[in-house]
Image 1 (cartoon, rainbow, N blue to C red):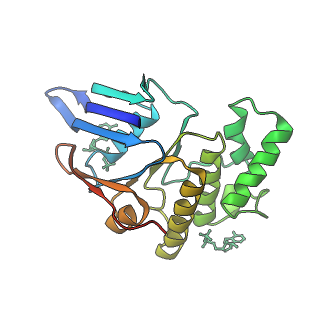
Image 2: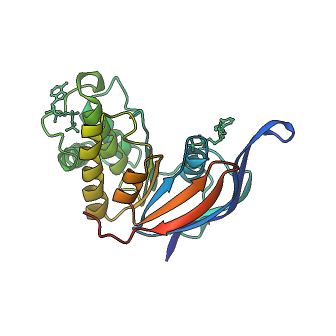
Length: 227
Ligand code: ADP
Ligand code: ADP
């Protein structure tokens, strides 16, 4: 059954007529529980806008957006986001960054520490718990950010060009990791990218957006089994 229903969503930045930008124009999309969907398209086609609306960071101008039948009205721990620039807290260790997502859910200290350690193991960062973000590589920072996003046990993982800042070799490693983690955890994933190879490698379904004016061009089911 549908976990996310995006119905005829439009997004306009600014005021109509006065330099307004149409970022999304009548986008409709249904995403099933556990599905891995890539949003693919060139820079400026509205991918991040759609992801931010899904996250609840900003409202749609028109249309509706439902999660399990309920309107998305703001951020919620049932949906977490991994950003291109990691967005880790620089003053917190890897361990504390991962625990942060659990604090918000009211998980007690001992259980927080234990669950964070397990997640750090999942992303293969064991041994680096006490490092600060500036002490570790880009790939490791993104591993930590993925662990932090998984910490609240979200239903939906939203990823915005998560590997865009990494070198090619690290990117391939992280792609393999996210394929493994998402299938093990059975999360619904919406993955924004402008890389066609990455989109096809990871996703059950690739949603291709057209550059202007922010529409879906086509949806492609990926026929090959995932690694
Ligand atoms: P993508 O993620 O595919 O690169 P975006 O969603 O970031 O696309 O942008 C879609 C369009 O909306 C672009 O024309 C962009 O310049 C514009 N846009 C994005 N964010 C804003 C904003 N905060 N204010 C005004 N225009 C914006
Ligand atoms: P990835 O994190 O995707 O495995 P990286 O190129 O980021 O790839 O790192 C490769 C390995 O190099 C890491 O797993 C780690 O063992 C080591 N490494 C990188 N940066 C550091 C660092 N600042 N301190 C200690 N070890 C590091």
